[in-house]
View (cartoon, rainbow, N blue to C red):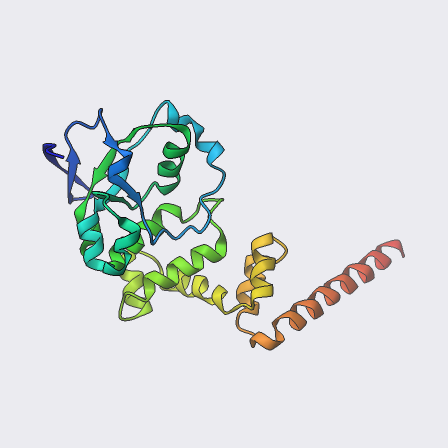
Length: 226
């Protein structure tokens, strides 16, 4: 682009920031992260304000740096110069609502490894109410897969080993139990416990627990009447 670059630091890491951030980067030079942990970007109508203003820049790496990690994604990256690591919903909203450019923060250190890039993408979404709990678990699993062990992944990302284990355990639920969890019909604490039950017994165990709970409530109600 012929754009000058200033060096700054964020959390003591060198960060390359486009000097003329007020002009932004044309959308044609940007592509969304193919490894975005979110399967569903949510309701873009909630992001309609991007047409008028952008409140913060979005983290990017060069497409060259990304493809050094995932060369198999070349077709999905296309001719874009930058890959948006964080802010994919806003990029989609910019396309939908007619914004021509986006402000960026370019930090190539994020493309030092697969684990680092996946971790950065996951951490943007952790804790958000609209981040599906199973998507989060799958994203954590993908990050862990890029490290020698769960403990090393947790240490590298600043996560606790227990939290990582709890997230990964949800993937041991049967598809039916995962659907219930996503729909809010199964509490997370119960899901983590049921994940330790053999898959063939999870549904029957949950139903037995529900029946037992109903019976206890019935007995308690009868006792109060007496």
